[in-house]
Length: 79
View 1: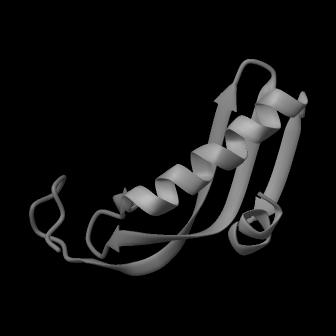
View 2: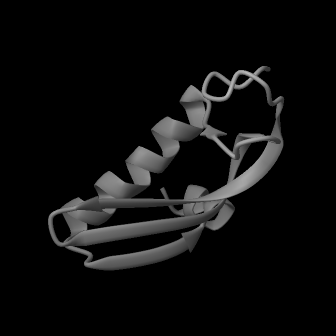
């Protein structure tokens, strides 16, 4: 897949850290599978992974968590 941002790089499988904030809640999820541009570093998540990340964050917001730092695979097992 060619990068939509820089138009030169090729996106390759990798992992990233996703940080989401809503109100008083901050959620950090490490080792999230993504496609990463080998030129500019732009990151792309597929729909399934995006849905999972957002579900984890929503659960934390509803639970009243202020800060949560997780690894993606472990987080998937707990939802």
